[in-house]
Length: 328
Image 1 (tube, helix red, strand yellow):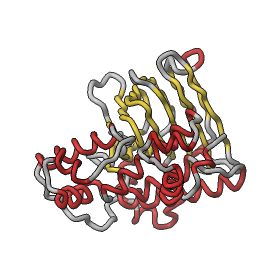
Image 2 (cartoon, helix red, strand yellow):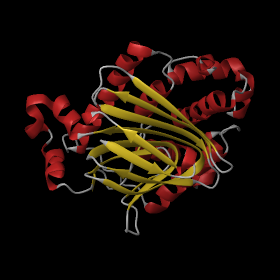
Image 3 (cartoon, rainbow, N blue to C red):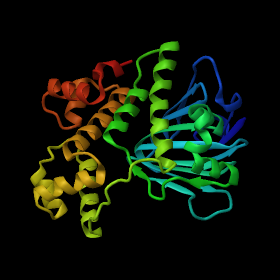
Image 4 (tube, rainbow, N blue to C red):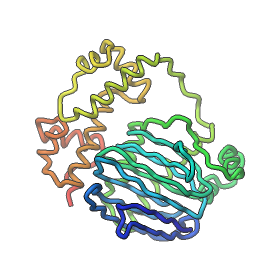
């Protein structure tokens, strides 16, 4: 199993990676790629766990960047676009095969990978979980054919497939799991066990759902004009995380009353406005601490808190650990 990546962000413009069959390994394998070009800066962190390969990107690229990718093995990818925008386009095709916007995720299958990855948005954060059909068979065991019939059909047809026509918003629960994985303070065997457990839980939930086994969700009957209003509010929130964001002000921006805004936002985004704003603030704070090394007090101010202790409490409550753990 081998992958070849070509881009100006890599030294000598090329990065080759060989993997063990089905990503199987008895130990944790870690690697970091520092990106430092005039247009793109950041870090790519790689983790090989037993049966899966994890890639975490934290990048600052105002103009975006692209990577030509060629893999010689079939793979599933569970892609979480925490901040930014992602697309993959097959070679010689004009339209992207899959697109994932800011704070959304999707699952897709590629029998072979030969095309262009494009990343936009700055700063941008991504967590990608790559695995082969072998891992699914291992997780499902004797119930593989029955439990994962749809997924098995996709593999047998040997054609690219996207499991959700519309990318799914990252729920607050999944968002916390992602942050736990990204900011895991453990090392060695403990880190492998902890991270493997977190990702396996994520995978099982989403694989079963992608196979159509999840309980049917309540249909969201919201007019397109109201959806557009919610998207305007979402953009305003992301652009003003360092300011106070009172519900009354957001309701005016959306063109709703406060009650309608809170109700419709939860229906569409799967969480409350307060939790959504807090989550975004803590994610931005994580980036500022990890990548820029800013003091906690300054980070608190940058994400809308006048009291550093209130920020620290909110960070611990949201992500499960103190912001000081991100300090190197």
